Length: 259
Image (cartoon, rainbow, N blue to C red; front, top):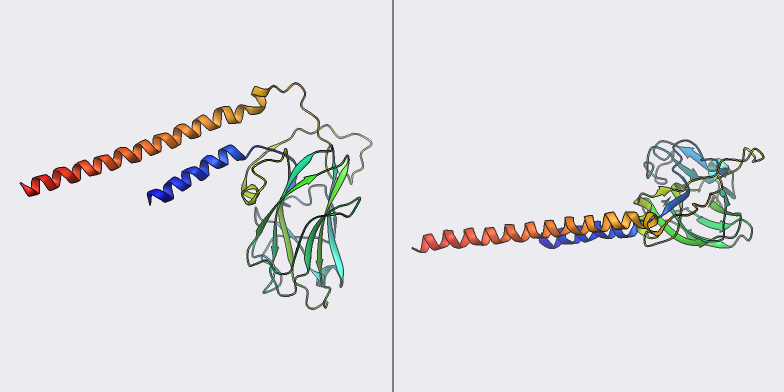
C-alpha cells in the first residue's frame, strides 16, 4: 500500500514538471468544427449509430466526429484540415481516436502540401479511445490533414472511425506522450483577424510575445516545483511519523502484556 502511494506521488510530481506548453489551436467539437475545414466527417453526440463499431460516447464533453463509409460514400475518405500553422517550428500534435470493428480501414495524418505521412494506423485498435502524441515540424503556413478511410471493401461492411480532443501544442516537451491527451495547457495569444481573411480561414495567426523575461516564462516551474516538493515531503514525513507512532504503541502494549 505504501509503495502505491509513493508511485502516485511521483506521478503527480512528474505531471507538474512535464506539462508546460501552449495550445496553438484545438478542437473538442463541442461547438462545431472550430473553423477547421471539414469534408465528410460527421459530428455526433450520442452512442455510435451502428452496433459493434464506433465509440459509446465522446472522449471529452458530449460531441465527437466520425467517418463511416455507408454515410460518406463507398470508397471515400473523410478529410479534416487544420490550416494556417504559422512559423517553422516543432509542435506536439495530440488527439484521441477510436477504431473498433472488423472492417476498419485506416486513419492518417499528413502534410497538405507534400502529402507526407505524419502518422498512420490501420485496422481495429481496441474497444476504447486511444491517444496519439506526435512531434511535428512545420514549415511556414502549413496545413495538417486528418484522413479517415472507410468502406473500401464493401459499402455494407464499413466500420466507424472516431476522432476527438485534437490539440496542436507548442513548444513540444515532455508532455508529448500518452499523458498529454489529458493534460491542460495555456492558450497562446492570437492576433486580431485581418479584414481580408476569408470566412473559411481555419485558425488565427499567432502573435509572438515580445520581451518575455526568463522569469515570466518559467514562473510555473518556480512556483509549482517547490510547492510539489514541499507537499511530497510533508506527506512522507507524516507517513514516517504515523509508522513510528504505531510501532511505539505496539511496543508499549506488548510490554505491558509480558509484565
